[in-house]
Image (cartoon, rainbow, N blue to C red):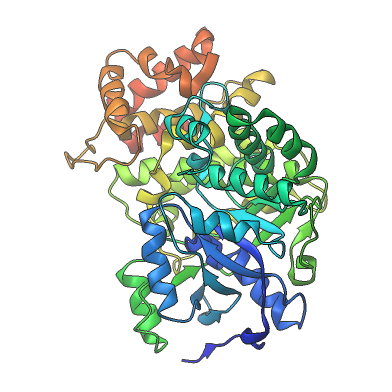
Length: 477
């Protein structure tokens, strides 16, 4: 099997972007878009310098350096796999606890975009308020020692300060993470952190630095033995970090940049002033769908997402919730039919080549439920509908956090707050109000007696009739 190679002279590329967080998603998404753009002979001064602030980033740097910064991306089309080597990254900044090399790279005038994939939980958001939390210990530490920052945002603040002092145009901060208003969230983190040590700098950043919102979408599962075996089948057995992904990809971006941008619209990216509508569509229908599928699948011992979609009960469960409780509250998006989009999402979930795991979908529910499920619950209540399917999906998350599957199998910890969630879930078996009363997650929903009663009914149903029985009751109406 052949492997497509970069169709341009990589020696002629120069860096224009520093990207922090070289996980699978970035290498299958932004790096692939730029690889396609470079192949058109366009914008060769926008190559990527990789960067990171965690020990895992140093390991990724070592792996990619050994292969001249090339990434293997295998598209898992059911009609046939396709492998390519992505050449849009030309280096990787040395990972250092004080982030000196990263700050130096971002100070360089030719770096005009700093982009990030640091996960939804990496923006120091207070779940109770949905706003930047300046009291987070890592943020307090960076505010106290701004010259030796440990976080990505601390390094960004230090680099912007140096560019301001040198009279260099500031770079754009482009979040590529999957959370609502990711540009606004990134702005809150950078400006909020700067304000702790230098209010004048914070005001300058707020006035001069662009933080465009963007919606990103491509399923790229974690790399394991299966993915490495695929790379080996293509003759790339020495690559320890290949990426697999679905053929579908989407990137919708606000056209607000401090110092220019690459012509990504030439390779399929969409520049739009309606990013919030696109991201609401995606977050509610796709990410919400993931949460609806993941917990019952894990509880029933179903490993892969496509296997869950082949289960008639789970497939009917997610389809009914999507059709009755999610699609009706999603704003219309220009050029998109929401019912067609829902069907596309369900087809993507059913792709057997992806082999995405239910365990991955269940990770970090304490951070994801407030973004992907609870807003849809609120919007349904606001329109006078008690969303029993979404409430049942949240009850299944509670049942999962109990820590033991119905067959007695122990569920491995899968959330940064696992111990607290497990204790609360076990108490909720007798008193469901304790679960819905977690204000950091559910906010003031605990003040709604009808919602509390509906959740208690759903959780008791899960315990009394089992996971499959509870879903069947909802499907039957």
